[in-house]
Structure formats: C-alpha cells, structure tokens
Image 1: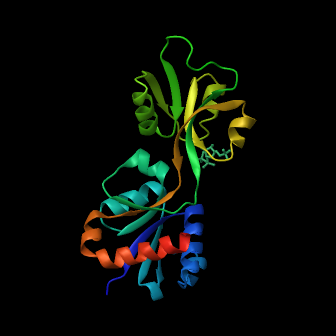
Image 2 (image 1 turned 90 degrees about the horizontal axis):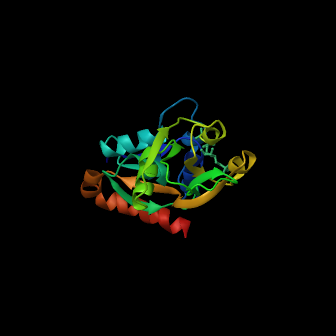
Image 3 (image 1 turned 180 degrees about the vertical axis):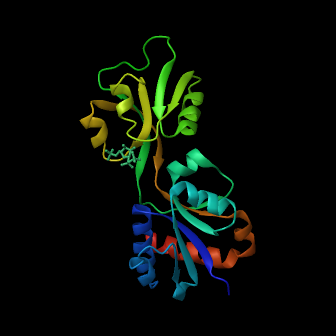
Length: 209
Ligand code: PRP
C-alpha cells in the first residue's frame, strides 16, 4: 500500500516528533541520519516523512502533496484553515503576546497605535476583537527592536521564556493565545485513508498520554 506522507516542521518540532515516533516503536534511523535528504521513510510504519519550513508544511497539506503535517499553532493562526486540525501534541509550547516598553501606558491616549509583528493576521484579528483601530507593520525578524527604535508602540510576537522581552526592556501587556505543535490532515486524505490516519493519530495520542 502507498505510504502515508507526513510533513514535519524542520527543527525543534521535527526533533520532538521523531522522539514521539521512537516512543511509539517506529524505526527512525533514516530521520536520525538524514544528511541532506528531504524525503525519508519509516518502513515499519509505512510512513514517508518530508521536512519543510512551517509555512510550507501547511501548503503541502492544503494541496494534498502530504496527507498530514506537524506545525505550530502560530503558523496555523497566521496562515490558513483549509485542512483539519486533529491533535495537540503538547510540545513546542509558547504563546502569542502583545508587548510594549515596560513603562509605557499602551492604551493611553486616542492616537492610532502602531504594532510591529511577523504575524499581521493574528495581530489584526486580536485588535478586531477589541474594536481597536491600529496600524500594523510587518517585520521579518527581531520584532522586539521595533519599539526600541521608534517604529512601533508595541509588538505582537511569540513569547517562550520571556528572556528576549526582558533583555530589551519590554513587558507583556496581554497574552493573545497559547501555542503548541498540532497535527493537521488534508481534507481528502481524511476521507480516503480514514482508518490509516485515525490509527496513526490514536497511536500518537496514546503515547502522549
Ligand atoms: C522567537 C520570538 C522571540 C523569541 C522569544 O524568535 O520571535 O524573538 O523567540 O523567545 P523567549 O521568550 O524565550 O525569549 P525565534 O528565536 O524563533 O527567532 P526568529 O526571530 O527568527 O523567529
């Protein structure tokens, strides 16, 4: 039978998923000694594993190039919803927060505030829930810099330990949403290969418990 294909987000989520697969008894040799190979097989589980950047994991699953994917809730919230989100893996935990310079009163005054973020859709949705008009500036990295150099009043970003905020004189104003790794499934695959997919998800879920 054709293997199920799963896309893993390269890096920490990949490593945590491989650990989970090992606990499930899968032979992950190909994944542990992958070199530069991008498609790897777990023969005993009839699985084909693809390694990709988070945004691409979603693209592969939405287009059906992969049946399943492991990706952070941050990318899911920012990027799209044309798939089923089936399982919270519990690892890769962090959160989306609104943060600003420690002593600033972010909500004071009536001027439209500027928000810097790598996640404009998440930021927009958050301020819509508050019916608050803001200008959003998309930044590609080191978002914490934006308030320090006068580009923004506040940031919407991922906070894990809080160290980056602290070391740059910023603090959390509000938490927006918790983040962790999720398993997503292509909508057609879930119909056509229901039993195989449900069996794999049940095995993963049992091992998490
Ligand atoms: C994320 C995020 C923060 C940092 C928060 O960046 O954008 O900068 O982690 O972590 P902390 O609360 O533990 O300090 P990441 O390291 O993923 O790099 P990036 O800016 O390239 O996305």
